[in-house]
Length: 387
Image (cartoon, rainbow, N blue to C red; front, side):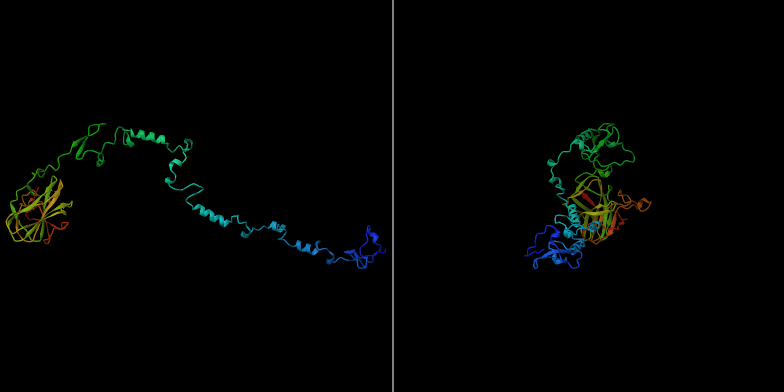
């Protein structure tokens, strides 16, 4: 077949190309048109003869060997052994475990605005905005307002059996083991309650007159009064710088306006008089009043006036004297006086003691009577007070 020109002739059937000289052809040879010679030729297929759009075997081999880049999909191997996406690959809108833990911890510690419910005081949630709970949702163990009102009303009306103390009684009848307590009800001051029978209110009665029933109860006002009811017929020469104390009982509340003592033998000097309260042990305690001094240089009924000292009823006080000289004062006979509250040092009645004395350098009276005083065996001083 004779063909001319550079354009390959139209081939309808393979045998239309007539004979083609192909020296030792092998697999992968192909027939092509050689424009330079205007002949059909045959040659082995090489890479340069494959158009770029057609994939080579080597390209297929390389692609098949790649396990991790199959079009951003997982290979079979990756499917069988999956791994987590690193945090860097997470979308910013996705919360990591650490972020979730932090947010939960922060949320848990927030004391207010928990899901729009305030954890605050009643002032922040007035009752007017708190929804009313209907009766069906209130547990049976919780009392309704009407139940509380009813029970309080019933309780207020009870006159018997109050708090189980006994039927028909406000309180149980006292027994030997019961102690009488101070009343806190509004009864009149200085009144006693007198029983009037079962289920009957007690009545108020007057308390006995202030003071006791001893002779000390009966003391005329605007007069001088002394520790003993006996007449002081003896004397006592005091020691300088010694503090003496004689008992004085007040049956009623009094106000002392004077204090004094009779000097039977004078000595130049001074003596100081005063009043102490009892410490609860028949012993002088705290100073009530340092009344002042008297001059002992003359025989006289020495007085200190212008006083206003309030002494309580039914109380024991101590009238005291201390001097810086050695005058002699009116005193009671220690063997015949009724001032026996200090007792006796033996069973012999004539050893009764009626006065304390203790060493004390003459000066203003101390705030508390000195300790360790001696029960005096001397005639007790007849110190008097005026009220």
